[in-house]
Amino acid sequence: MLHSSSKTYRIGQIVPSSNVTMETEIPALFRARELTLPERFTFHSSRMRMKKVTQEELAAMDAMSLKCAIELSDARVDVMGYACLVAIMSMGRGYHCVSEANLQQETAQNGNPTPVVTSAGALIDGLRTLGAQTVSIITPYMRPLTDKVVDYIEHQGIRVKESIALEISDNLEVAAQNPMNLLEIARGMDLSGIDVLVASACVQMPSLDAIVALEKQTGLPVTSAAVCTTYQMMKKLGLHAYSPIGGTLLNGTF
Image 1 (cartoon, rainbow, N blue to C red):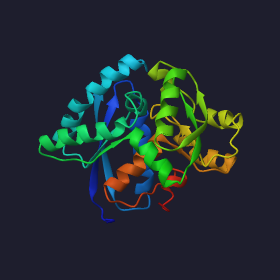
Image 2: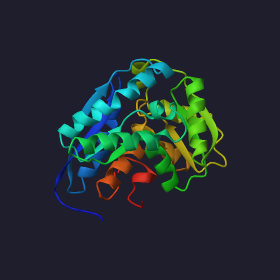
Image 3: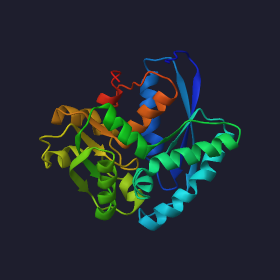
Image 4: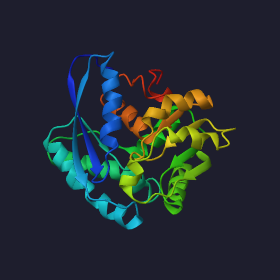
């Protein structure tokens, strides 16, 4: 059911301590929506420690996500997003279902059951919504973690034709990447036979400013973990999933 009112919704985000992009790109998508639609949004974060994108730090960080869910639940947020795709995907195939259930249970036990979105689950859902059977992805991760992401996506029934690994382990360095560099990276890829290009399979690597330009350049639907997470949040809130800067997935068709 779609609601349309000037209601203000609280958006909660469970964020790696070194992540700065999730709290810029997701609000930007919601703010752009506010220019034409009546709903308003505020943003609230809880952090879990992580500086280097390694298997060990990711596993330790994931264990802190339950505490973050309780803290955001105290703020009575209307939806919460777990903002680290690779932390979920590196924990094993299908783990987003486990994580979402665990986090949701924490909010229920705290007396405020809250819809939970993981960026990992949201990317899968977004690709399915776009009808993608074959995709190519750009990631900032080291190659072994990128391979885990590829395996995770393929286990969900979506073929990955090509995966770019920029091999940046320092999470703040990931955030410092210029999103417009993605246009050049995409020029070096063979995009024939794919349905969707994932311009950033990472919510820390900025891509939002390049999404629409990439769609024009490639002639393909282009999405990112942040765009898919925003789409899923809007759906969980029962809102029209639209933002003028989010590319095909958020153009209002879905």
